[in-house]
Length: 356
Image 1 (cartoon, rainbow, N blue to C red):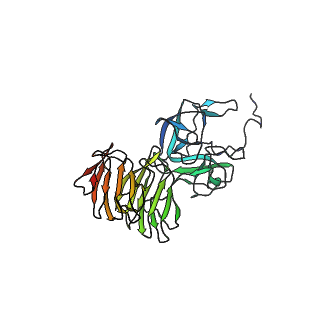
Image 2: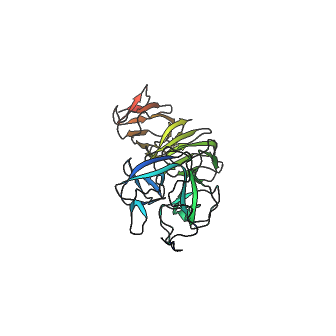
Image 3: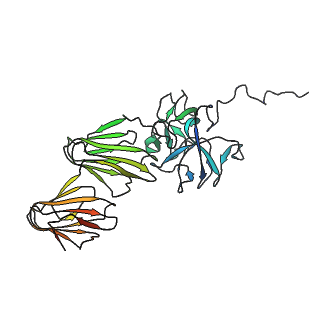
């Protein structure tokens, strides 16, 4: 008769494995191909080169897809562990509750960050989780939360709240920024801009796939120039009046403007490039003759141009112009309505500037 030795089984078993689903509650699982390397279970993965590919994170600002699920179908390694091999399909949980390794002690409700840059500790590896940014080596999963009280270096439950992105932003989550150099949070749905202290330079990091972000001016003490890390068209956006706003959506690798309220107005006083992030350009040539350039815009973009102060001719040269080469504004009151058709700027309506 077989004899059971004490070394065959431990008295207690581990609570879970990395990447194990917590229970049978509602969850969403997607599949992507491991693009460039093997991927262990229970790790954060980000969007790959193709729509059907995933990667371990390698830098800040990458699009979070979800967490790799533990499965016995993974390829067994020499140490007995299983993982998803390069070019094989990985199962990824993007909604629901999952067991993960936490680098720090956590309690229910703590924020969740995934590591994109390995640390000195051999256990603090890419794709694992913690509750802060680790000096910039980890990115926030907006809306995700730890749901257990767990010591550092152990397995904790983590909940992802929104299928498709791991992102949950409450409709009323907002912030107000007031410093002349500010950063718009990607963890809020609305950023209110108060330029009481003067003109503001506002930066915005990349979001996550499908994320919506609105930025609105509430106090006008100067223009607010918004510079997203990646913007689909142009490099900056400009708010110049109270209640003017942009509504943005992050898709692929950049923010897209999907809504606009109010006008962005700019007065040019010297030779140079005309900003693309405006609706109305006023010309003040008090300092003398101006030579200005206008780069290509986006399809359907309109720009109203008017000379307010005539201290010398203002010659505008669009990069591509349907009606000629230049428009010259030589008298106060000269104006034109221009539109970019995707290839050229053209004058629409009547222009009192001289087209040549």
